[in-house]
Image 1 (cartoon, rainbow, N blue to C red):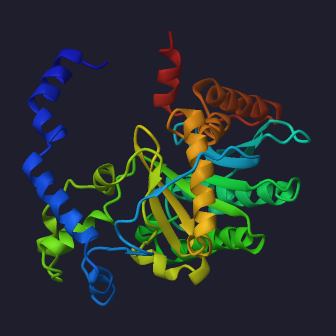
Image 2: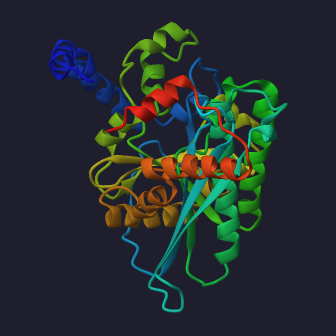
Length: 374
């Protein structure tokens, strides 16, 4: 059990590491940001050079700020999220479960129900993963992303013609699949192609979609400040200045509640592998109590009316959800596999094994934990 007295001593002793805020450094970074926003030649300087860190490009003026009008017309929003039960090596079986939750809100549309909730369990037995490579947890996480994107299209495709009101489809998290870079090349190619296939289907049907990130920790825009301080050098060591500075910090200076930033084109390496119309773009929006990051594909980013519509619908969702999109919060509730659900899964699995005259091997550790429950 946790020794709270010892933990408290550790927290107090290391608080300077947890809450380091160099005011002078931040003031210097803020001054540089203001200079960059007033520079008329910055884009050409960034676009024409190679940098050791990913520095985005942007549309319009870097210092652009747009006030998003409160959306008060009829619209629909679909949100998808996933959860899982990983294979349990103490349970003696390689099966696992991925649960995909969805929520559809129809606002001011009399002919449609106000809310539609759903969750779909997907059972895998481990045999599907043979020859794929990667460890079991990696495979589960990659499959969960695949199922979420697949559900985003499948559900949206069924409903997007039901009403003339705009429909926005949302995922919780990034559309930049950067984590694939660390995977085995064959594994990366397999799932990257599957993800692109789902996004391509959304594009073909012209279904608006976006990824939303709450409290983002990205540093792409703040790399502009580092590049300026390093005099646009290609020496990576010079980019360690302002290391704790994130895009959220920059946008907290830059934006007021209800405003969005310019639209940026991400230059994270894997983005170059996307089809041009699906290349990830992003903007930041001040939703009232925090900065949110909105990620969209190129075909939406290049249409300012669509960008403004996506932001307006997301801002309304954040207002309804207390600074976080209410649809994503509800999708998470539909997807999450809680403790009793996990126990039910293993109980039914054990019960079925008895019915099929097959005994399930529990590890000694698991049997001990079961006996110790109070």
